[in-house]
Length: 608
Image (cartoon, rainbow, N blue to C red; front, side, top):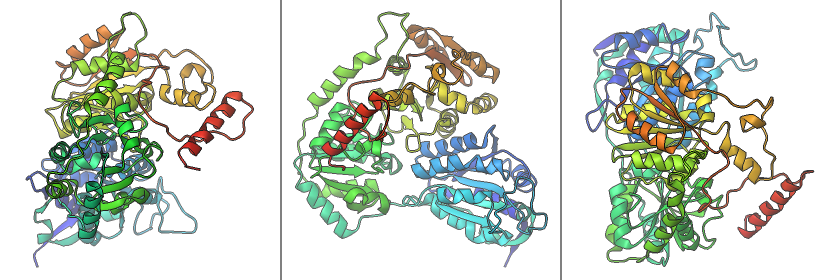
C-alpha cells in the first residue's frame, strides 16, 4: 500500500480540498480562520502550505466569520460549504452561537476548533476548562448539542473515519447541519503514514430521496379529497431546487402558495398562485387562506411558531401533510408524513393528480392585500418627517434590480421585509429567521456575495444589530467585497420595545433613552463605518436615501447608508396571533389586561 507521510493537520486540509460537487466545484470554498494557540502551529502551517488550493480568509470575530460561512452555504443552496477554525477556549466558544444558528437552519458548515492536548502532559493549558469529575471534557463539548456530528480527534488516524462521516453529514439533505471536529493541538502536529488513495478526489452527488409508497398514497388521497388546500413553501423548496416544480404544480392544480421566511422568493411575488407571506409576519391574503384550508401541504418547512401562529393559524380540523426530507420535520403536529425530496415529491404528485384542480381564486385577496400595504412604502408627503421602516423598505425596493438579494436577520426588518418585500426570483430573499441572530447581517451579506459575486447584495440592519457585531465590515473593506448596508437607526431595540409594550410591559431597557442612565443616543454610525474602511453617508430623509442607493451601485467595496427611523411604527395589516406568555400576577393594570387577552386567545384557539 502506498502511503503519504503528513501531519494530521496537513492531511485534513489535503482531504478537504479534493471533495467535489457534482457540478465540478470544490465542496469547500476555503476556510475562515482566526489563529491562536491551539490551531496556529498545526492547522495554521497546513493552511499556509495549501493557500493556493484551499484559500484562507481572516475574520475579526469567530462568531461572525462563522456567520459568513453559513450565509455562503445558504446562498449556495447547501451545495457548497466552508470550514471555520479557531483557537481553544474563547475562540472556540465564540463559535457556539453560530453553530446553533447553522443547526436550527439545517445548514452545512465545518467547525474545527483547537482542543486540549491528547497526551494530557501539559494540562491544564492556557484557556483549558477543567471538569473536575470528567477528564474527557473540554470547552468544545459545548458544541455537542448544536452539531449534527461531533468528534474529537485524539489520534492522527482518526481522520480516516471522521472526515468521511463529516462529508456524509454535510451532504445529507435530511441530516444536514454543522459538524464539529475538535482537533487536539498536539495531534494536529503529529505525523502519520496515510494511505495515498485516501486523498483521491471524490464527487458528492446531490441526494434526492423518493417517498415511501404507503406515505405517498395517503398524501395523494388527502390532496384529491381537498376542497380548499393551501401550500406552505419553506426553505426546503430552495435547497431542493424545486421552485420551478412548485410553480408548475400550484398552477396546474389551482393550489395557492404561502411563503415562510425561509421559503420567500420560491415564487415571484406577482405569480398568480402566490398569496404572499404566512404567519405572524404574514399577509392577510395568505393567513386567511390557511385559516380556511382543509388540507395544508407543508413543503420543506419546519413549521416554526412564526409560520403557524403558534399553531393557532390553521383550522383545527385541517389535514396537515409534511413533505420534507427530514422525518422529524415531516411528522410534526400529527401531520401525514411524506418524507422525500421536495422536487421529487412535487413531480410525482403533479403526474398522479392528472387533471385534478382545486381551482382556487387568488386575485381578489392579493389585490386587497397590496392595496392595504403598498401605500405604507411610499415616500412620506412631508419630506422632513421621521421616516418609518416601511418607507425605507419602499425606497430600497424601488432601487432594486433583478440581480438584488435582500437580506437581514433580526429586529424590525425581518417582519417588515417578509410582509412588504416583492421578491422577483428564487434566492433573492435571504433571511436568517430560524435563530434570528443579531449580528448575522454584515457577515452574512459577505457570505452571500462570496457565494454569488454577480448579485447585488443589500443588507438591511438596525442600529442594535450593528452595535452587536460590526467588525466584519472591516473584513469586507479589506477584501473589497461589495455590499450595501442600509442601517436604520431607531436608537435601540425598537422591535422588542414594541413587543414589550404590546404585552403590557413598560417601556424599559430597550430604547437607549429608556435604559439605565437615559442619555440621548448620539452615535455617529456613518463615521464609525468610515473608520473601518467603508464608504458611508448619513441621509436625512427618503429622497436622500434613494440618491445614496444610486451612489452605492458604483461603489467598489462596502457602502453604508445610515438613516434615522421611527422606533414605534410598524405594519398593522396582516399578521396573526403569536404566543408570548404574559405574567399571571402583576401590580400593573396593563399587564393584567394583557394576561386576560392572552388567556382568551389561548381558549379561542383551543390551546388550553
